[in-house]
Length: 256
Image 1 (cartoon, one colour):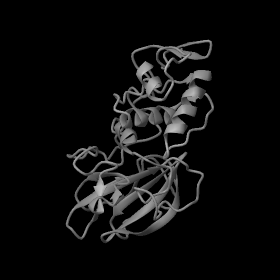
Image 2 (cartoon, rainbow, N blue to C red):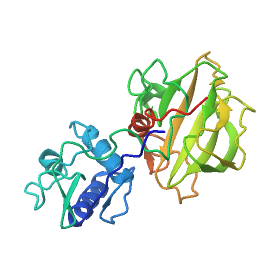
Image 3 (tube, helix red, strand yellow):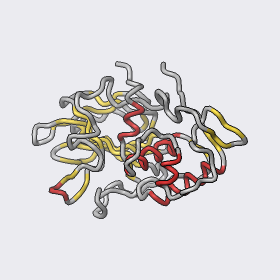
Image 4 (cartoon, rainbow, N blue to C red):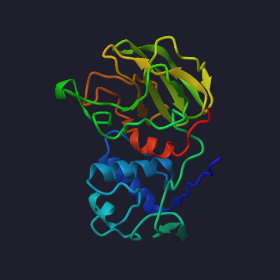
Protein backbone atom coordinates (compact mmCIF):
# COMPACT_ATOMS: atom_id res chain seq x y z
CA UNK A 1 0.00 0.00 0.00
CA UNK A 2 1.30 3.45 -0.89
CA UNK A 3 1.96 5.60 2.14
CA UNK A 4 0.03 8.79 2.75
CA UNK A 5 2.38 11.67 2.04
CA UNK A 6 0.22 14.65 3.08
CA UNK A 7 2.19 17.17 5.07
CA UNK A 8 0.51 20.07 6.82
CA UNK A 9 1.24 23.71 7.57
CA UNK A 10 -0.47 25.80 10.22
CA UNK A 11 -0.51 29.47 11.15
CA UNK A 12 -1.85 32.94 10.44
CA UNK A 13 -0.49 32.88 6.88
CA UNK A 14 -2.73 29.91 6.11
CA UNK A 15 -5.77 31.69 7.56
CA UNK A 16 -5.03 34.68 5.31
CA UNK A 17 -4.64 32.36 2.34
CA UNK A 18 -7.96 30.64 3.08
CA UNK A 19 -9.72 34.01 3.41
CA UNK A 20 -8.38 35.16 0.03
CA UNK A 21 -9.25 31.90 -1.67
CA UNK A 22 -12.81 32.14 -0.34
CA UNK A 23 -13.12 35.67 -1.76
CA UNK A 24 -12.04 34.47 -5.19
CA UNK A 25 -14.05 31.25 -5.38
CA UNK A 26 -17.77 30.86 -5.97
CA UNK A 27 -17.71 27.05 -5.99
CA UNK A 28 -15.44 26.07 -3.09
CA UNK A 29 -15.73 27.36 0.50
CA UNK A 30 -12.90 26.62 2.91
CA UNK A 31 -13.02 26.53 6.69
CA UNK A 32 -10.67 29.36 7.73
CA UNK A 33 -8.92 27.33 10.41
CA UNK A 34 -5.26 27.94 9.60
CA UNK A 35 -4.79 24.30 8.65
CA UNK A 36 -3.31 23.62 5.20
CA UNK A 37 -4.82 20.22 4.50
CA UNK A 38 -6.24 18.51 1.43
CA UNK A 39 -9.13 20.92 0.74
CA UNK A 40 -6.92 24.01 0.96
CA UNK A 41 -4.30 22.39 -1.26
CA UNK A 42 -6.92 21.55 -3.90
CA UNK A 43 -8.42 25.05 -3.66
CA UNK A 44 -4.96 26.51 -4.34
CA UNK A 45 -4.52 24.30 -7.40
CA UNK A 46 -7.96 25.24 -8.77
CA UNK A 47 -7.26 28.96 -8.21
CA UNK A 48 -3.84 28.70 -9.87
CA UNK A 49 -5.28 26.90 -12.89
CA UNK A 50 -8.06 29.47 -13.28
CA UNK A 51 -5.53 32.31 -12.92
CA UNK A 52 -3.14 31.09 -15.60
CA UNK A 53 -0.48 29.91 -13.14
CA UNK A 54 1.22 26.54 -12.85
CA UNK A 55 -1.17 24.50 -10.69
CA UNK A 56 1.54 23.03 -8.47
CA UNK A 57 -0.17 23.78 -5.15
CA UNK A 58 2.80 25.84 -3.93
CA UNK A 59 1.77 29.28 -2.67
CA UNK A 60 4.63 31.45 -3.87
CA UNK A 61 4.86 35.17 -4.59
CA UNK A 62 2.98 34.98 -7.91
CA UNK A 63 0.06 33.17 -6.28
CA UNK A 64 -0.10 35.69 -3.43
CA UNK A 65 -0.11 38.52 -5.98
CA UNK A 66 -2.88 36.93 -8.04
CA UNK A 67 -4.85 36.64 -4.82
CA UNK A 68 -4.47 40.40 -4.38
CA UNK A 69 -1.72 40.52 -1.76
CA UNK A 70 0.98 42.51 -3.56
CA UNK A 71 3.49 42.57 -0.71
CA UNK A 72 2.61 39.63 1.50
CA UNK A 73 3.88 39.77 5.07
CA UNK A 74 4.68 36.10 4.84
CA UNK A 75 7.36 33.75 3.68
CA UNK A 76 7.92 33.51 -0.06
CA UNK A 77 6.08 30.22 -0.36
CA UNK A 78 3.82 28.12 1.81
CA UNK A 79 4.75 24.51 2.01
CA UNK A 80 5.19 22.02 4.70
CA UNK A 81 8.50 20.29 5.06
CA UNK A 82 9.81 23.08 7.28
CA UNK A 83 7.73 24.98 9.80
CA UNK A 84 9.08 27.79 12.00
CA UNK A 85 6.90 29.28 14.75
CA UNK A 86 3.83 27.77 13.14
CA UNK A 87 4.55 29.24 9.67
CA UNK A 88 5.68 27.13 6.75
CA UNK A 89 8.78 28.16 4.80
CA UNK A 90 10.02 27.30 1.36
CA UNK A 91 10.85 23.79 0.16
CA UNK A 92 10.56 22.32 -3.35
CA UNK A 93 7.22 20.54 -2.89
CA UNK A 94 4.00 20.85 -0.94
CA UNK A 95 0.83 18.82 -0.58
CA UNK A 96 0.30 15.48 -2.22
CA UNK A 97 3.53 14.03 -3.53
CA UNK A 98 2.04 10.64 -4.31
CA UNK A 99 -1.44 9.92 -3.05
CA UNK A 100 -3.96 10.18 -0.24
CA UNK A 101 -4.51 6.69 1.13
CA UNK A 102 -8.13 7.33 2.12
CA UNK A 103 -9.22 7.63 -1.53
CA UNK A 104 -8.65 5.63 -4.68
CA UNK A 105 -9.41 5.96 -8.40
CA UNK A 106 -12.87 4.70 -9.46
CA UNK A 107 -11.33 2.14 -11.84
CA UNK A 108 -8.42 -0.32 -11.50
CA UNK A 109 -6.78 1.18 -14.60
CA UNK A 110 -6.70 4.62 -16.16
CA UNK A 111 -8.85 5.48 -19.19
CA UNK A 112 -7.15 5.75 -22.56
CA UNK A 113 -8.40 9.33 -22.97
CA UNK A 114 -7.66 12.17 -20.57
CA UNK A 115 -10.40 13.64 -18.39
CA UNK A 116 -8.84 17.12 -18.77
CA UNK A 117 -9.44 17.80 -22.47
CA UNK A 118 -11.37 16.75 -25.56
CA UNK A 119 -14.71 17.90 -24.16
CA UNK A 120 -14.42 15.42 -21.30
CA UNK A 121 -13.09 18.10 -18.93
CA UNK A 122 -14.89 20.12 -16.29
CA UNK A 123 -16.19 23.38 -17.76
CA UNK A 124 -16.37 22.17 -21.37
CA UNK A 125 -19.17 23.65 -23.46
CA UNK A 126 -22.48 21.80 -23.46
CA UNK A 127 -25.89 22.30 -25.09
CA UNK A 128 -24.57 24.63 -27.77
CA UNK A 129 -22.73 26.80 -25.26
CA UNK A 130 -25.76 27.40 -23.02
CA UNK A 131 -24.19 25.57 -20.08
CA UNK A 132 -20.89 24.05 -18.94
CA UNK A 133 -19.89 20.46 -18.24
CA UNK A 134 -20.31 19.84 -14.52
CA UNK A 135 -17.91 16.94 -14.16
CA UNK A 136 -15.14 14.88 -15.73
CA UNK A 137 -15.86 11.97 -18.08
CA UNK A 138 -13.88 8.75 -17.68
CA UNK A 139 -14.28 6.79 -20.91
CA UNK A 140 -14.71 3.02 -20.49
CA UNK A 141 -16.79 0.36 -22.26
CA UNK A 142 -20.35 -0.12 -21.05
CA UNK A 143 -20.54 -2.71 -18.29
CA UNK A 144 -17.12 -1.82 -16.84
CA UNK A 145 -17.24 -2.08 -13.02
CA UNK A 146 -17.06 1.21 -11.09
CA UNK A 147 -15.37 1.27 -7.68
CA UNK A 148 -16.14 3.46 -4.65
CA UNK A 149 -13.37 6.01 -4.22
CA UNK A 150 -13.55 5.84 -0.41
CA UNK A 151 -15.70 4.64 2.45
CA UNK A 152 -19.03 6.39 2.18
CA UNK A 153 -22.75 6.64 2.76
CA UNK A 154 -25.47 6.55 0.12
CA UNK A 155 -27.36 9.85 -0.08
CA UNK A 156 -29.60 9.28 -3.09
CA UNK A 157 -30.72 5.97 -4.54
CA UNK A 158 -30.08 5.55 -8.27
CA UNK A 159 -32.29 7.81 -10.41
CA UNK A 160 -32.61 8.58 -14.16
CA UNK A 161 -29.81 10.91 -15.18
CA UNK A 162 -28.96 11.32 -18.86
CA UNK A 163 -29.70 9.60 -22.17
CA UNK A 164 -30.96 6.34 -20.69
CA UNK A 165 -28.39 6.16 -17.87
CA UNK A 166 -28.70 6.62 -14.10
CA UNK A 167 -26.79 8.39 -11.32
CA UNK A 168 -26.16 7.76 -7.65
CA UNK A 169 -24.96 10.17 -4.92
CA UNK A 170 -22.55 9.06 -2.20
CA UNK A 171 -21.00 11.08 0.62
CA UNK A 172 -17.32 10.31 1.15
CA UNK A 173 -16.10 12.19 4.21
CA UNK A 174 -16.55 15.92 3.55
CA UNK A 175 -17.30 15.59 -0.15
CA UNK A 176 -20.20 14.25 -2.20
CA UNK A 177 -19.69 12.37 -5.45
CA UNK A 178 -22.31 11.96 -8.11
CA UNK A 179 -21.45 8.85 -10.07
CA UNK A 180 -23.32 9.59 -13.28
CA UNK A 181 -24.13 7.69 -16.48
CA UNK A 182 -24.16 4.31 -14.76
CA UNK A 183 -26.11 1.39 -16.15
CA UNK A 184 -29.75 1.13 -15.00
CA UNK A 185 -30.15 -1.46 -12.24
CA UNK A 186 -26.39 -1.87 -11.80
CA UNK A 187 -25.95 -0.25 -8.38
CA UNK A 188 -24.83 -2.83 -5.82
CA UNK A 189 -23.24 -0.60 -3.19
CA UNK A 190 -25.92 -0.64 -0.52
CA UNK A 191 -26.49 2.08 2.08
CA UNK A 192 -22.79 2.20 2.95
CA UNK A 193 -19.78 1.49 0.76
CA UNK A 194 -16.14 0.69 1.34
CA UNK A 195 -13.18 2.09 -0.56
CA UNK A 196 -12.41 -0.08 -3.57
CA UNK A 197 -15.79 -1.83 -3.50
CA UNK A 198 -17.55 -2.37 -6.85
CA UNK A 199 -20.70 -0.25 -6.68
CA UNK A 200 -22.06 -0.03 -10.25
CA UNK A 201 -21.30 -0.45 -13.95
CA UNK A 202 -20.68 2.03 -16.73
CA UNK A 203 -23.86 2.71 -18.68
CA UNK A 204 -24.54 3.00 -22.40
CA UNK A 205 -25.90 6.28 -23.72
CA UNK A 206 -28.45 6.40 -26.55
CA UNK A 207 -25.64 7.83 -28.70
CA UNK A 208 -23.67 4.62 -28.26
CA UNK A 209 -20.92 6.19 -26.10
CA UNK A 210 -20.17 5.04 -22.56
CA UNK A 211 -18.37 6.60 -19.61
CA UNK A 212 -18.49 7.43 -15.92
CA UNK A 213 -19.51 11.07 -15.52
CA UNK A 214 -18.08 12.11 -12.15
CA UNK A 215 -19.14 15.24 -10.24
CA UNK A 216 -17.71 16.44 -6.90
CA UNK A 217 -19.32 18.73 -4.30
CA UNK A 218 -17.33 20.06 -1.36
CA UNK A 219 -20.10 20.77 1.16
CA UNK A 220 -20.83 17.27 2.36
CA UNK A 221 -23.10 18.60 5.12
CA UNK A 222 -25.62 20.09 2.69
CA UNK A 223 -28.75 18.15 1.78
CA UNK A 224 -29.76 20.51 -1.05
CA UNK A 225 -30.32 19.10 -4.51
CA UNK A 226 -27.15 18.88 -6.59
CA UNK A 227 -28.88 20.11 -9.74
CA UNK A 228 -30.41 23.56 -10.21
CA UNK A 229 -31.78 25.64 -13.07
CA UNK A 230 -29.36 28.51 -12.44
CA UNK A 231 -25.72 29.25 -13.21
CA UNK A 232 -23.35 28.17 -15.95
CA UNK A 233 -23.22 24.59 -14.69
CA UNK A 234 -26.87 24.17 -13.59
CA UNK A 235 -25.49 22.77 -10.36
CA UNK A 236 -25.21 23.57 -6.66
CA UNK A 237 -22.71 26.29 -5.72
CA UNK A 238 -20.21 23.91 -4.08
CA UNK A 239 -19.61 22.03 -7.34
CA UNK A 240 -15.86 21.77 -7.98
CA UNK A 241 -13.53 20.50 -10.67
CA UNK A 242 -12.90 16.77 -10.15
CA UNK A 243 -9.62 16.85 -12.09
CA UNK A 244 -7.32 17.80 -9.17
CA UNK A 245 -8.86 14.97 -7.15
CA UNK A 246 -8.55 12.46 -9.97
CA UNK A 247 -4.96 13.52 -10.54
CA UNK A 248 -4.23 12.45 -6.96
CA UNK A 249 -6.41 9.34 -6.89
CA UNK A 250 -4.90 7.97 -10.12
CA UNK A 251 -1.83 7.04 -8.05
CA UNK A 252 -3.95 4.73 -5.89
CA UNK A 253 -5.79 2.23 -8.07
CA UNK A 254 -8.28 -0.22 -6.50
CA UNK A 255 -7.28 -3.85 -6.50
CA UNK A 256 -9.17 -6.28 -8.73
